[in-house]
Amino acid sequence: MIDLSPKIQEALNNQIAYEGYASNFYLALAYWCDDQALQGCKKFFIRQSEEERMHMLKIYEYMSESGVHPKTSAIPEPPLEYESIQTAFSKVFEQERSVTQSIHNLLLLAQQENDYNTQQFLQWYVDEQREEEAVIRTILDRIKIIGQGGASLYYIDKEVEKINQEVIAAEAAGGGE
Ligand code: OFO
Image 1 (cartoon, rainbow, N blue to C red):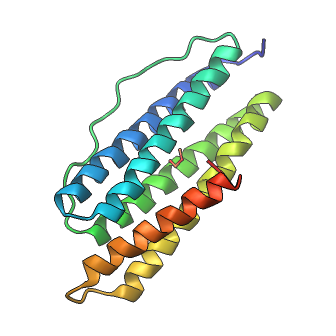
Image 2 (cartoon, rainbow, N blue to C red; image 1 turned 90 degrees about the horizontal axis):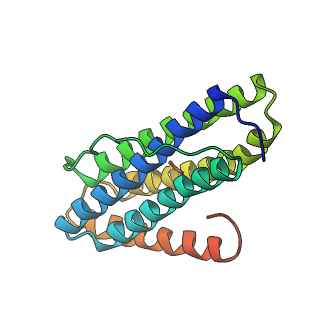
């Protein structure tokens, strides 16, 4: 059994809620894309939603292994509508940046609390956030290159589908989850 201070417990419970929100955020986005006939983007966000759920479950397990009962808090409703796929991906980037910030804050707290186990546990999340941000940056760069022309939605959707396949292949090769 690992000792988790009350502050760490609270911060991990908050992180459960953030990961749960991220999972719902991506799920809602997937079905917004479905409405727009963007099937490549839909697949990308469905996979991302499942990953976020897995990130949430890892925290449940870590807390439970530490002898602490994790909380399942209410989470806010995510946005249901976007102006455009370009706006949606900008929001995704903001969302990932805010989760990265909260992981970094949690890590700082674990350092202040001399909690080596939680520091080690969080390292996986630090790497994961870096990889996720890099993928979203790549998509934003491609969207910029494709531009706003008549067939741009078609090309953006194809590009996101291709990037989704690359992420799946990298994960299968052990490059992340
Ligand atoms: Fe949980 O990985 Fe992004 O948010």
